[in-house]
Length: 365
Image 1 (cartoon, rainbow, N blue to C red):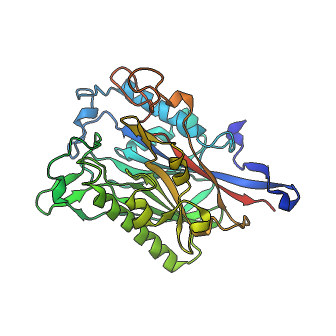
Image 2: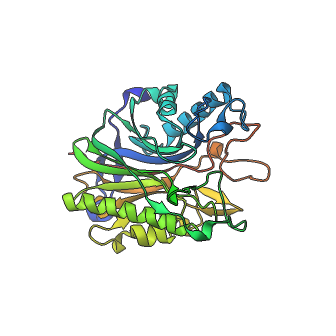
């Protein structure tokens, strides 16, 4: 039955000021997920992907790759349920090797019925990992898309990795000739969601490899570029609706998000043309999408423009946000009990991040 239900309605009651009258709404889920090393098994001579091959350190076989696709498709098909029985209309993703792995992913049985389109560009990241957007063609019609590079120069303070700080399995590559730090591009897509124009930016900001403090300015530069893109869209159309999402490698309270991007935690604090971050309050309550040394933070965020929080549901607006952390996504034993269930040598897991999502709703006439 689910594969026949594409236009989904949500029924809920507003406050007593509307006399408790139930209203019907169309609903769309917008999701982001760090796929954590979604690599195929083929050695790409132009990128540093040797680890993720059958002869590499991960012994990455066809069987393991297929299980990874199966695991991811299960998660993606369930994000946002039960409030919205339909799979997400939009899925932003990161740590994607190439377009081919996305084509394999959307052919998985749990996703095939939703007829996802793909928007993807190769990025200059040395491991070849990219960002991308999947979208349900039935609902969204893209009109333009581009990859916008982030140009930053090496910070001298990162010359030697600070062993006391967090690092990841990715590194910010520095090209010696010009001292440029190569990282993921920011992906901008504009199109029409059931006739309403909306823009989406998919991000994977520079990592903390080398230390959080030493690399902070890299992510601040990413936040400034994000803000510049949004400013340009708002200059063209002051009422434009923009959603920026991704693995920011910073939490909601870091400078890259709070100052460079200018995101606010409360709707009442958001100025005209400002940004609202529904994940900051979650972070303050101790919730998280990823953990390091038993310290949780929300690196994965979906942040929206003020135009999406105005109290008028005659067009699509933000309803609420969440972290998708079902029990099957959680390690249930060992040193990392309670952490996201990621890949290991003995088990093909899901990711070292939990997905995040927001709902857009519009009142039905």
